Length: 42
Image 1 (tube, one colour):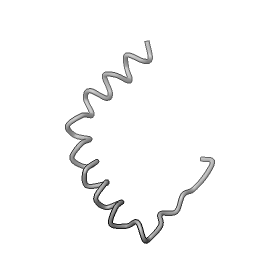
Image 2 (cartoon, rainbow, N blue to C red):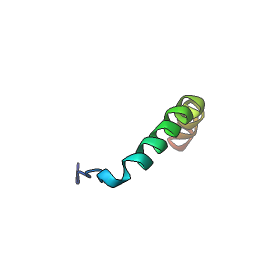
Image 3 (tube, helix red, strand yellow):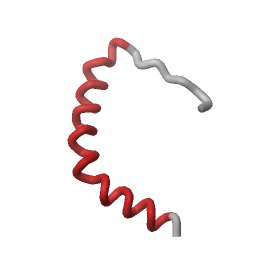
Image 4 (cartoon, rainbow, N blue to C red):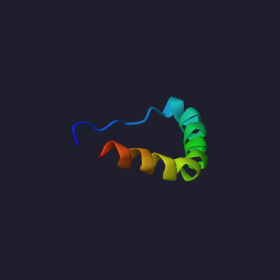
């Protein structure tokens, strides 16, 4: 690891909103993302 990033407290609301969206997005797209990654490894 090259660097540790500390979240800025004033952006907490934005981080929480983005993380909630990511939480919905990942299960719906993970199979496709993993298939794309496998194609790149060929």
